[in-house]
Length: 201
Image (cartoon, rainbow, N blue to C red):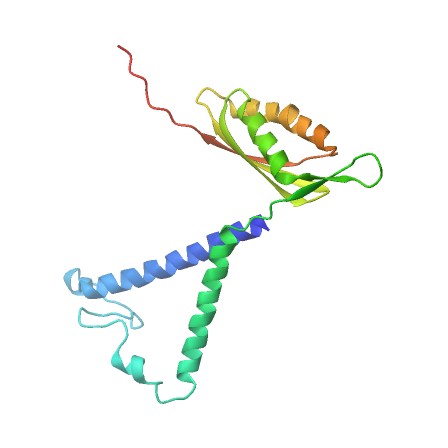
């Protein structure tokens, strides 16, 4: 779901940027009358030929007003755009974090462990690891098959490969053992922590 959302975001942002770029260039060329100053011709379909052109001529603004379907269609289209924009906005902050994790208690019934508790332990132990200055942890997936997402701030002297390997063999291994999980897939995002240069006298 996250990969689909990321791809959709990139496609929508790319299309929006392309439309705005084309619209902006067409308005810029027409408003500055660049075809006259620079001596080139514009294709016949170019929307703005000169400084006197407007974005929406009076004919385009009023030609459908007499039709009864015009305003309902406009309102419906704007409503769809508004709902789509709201859905997109809400989807950015929506993460399917696990509230509970199913733990094998040995009695055949199992127990539930609070997801926030395991997230807190993961973040705390990750921050205590050598080379990590700060960490955030989130659990997603299903109760019986959780997945961890870690965001780490690496110290300047840290080696990413060593930090990731160490976290897998120590922090994540302890989390799997304490929660009774056979596996705990994890995705780590590493971010460098910038420090001000120290002045030597």
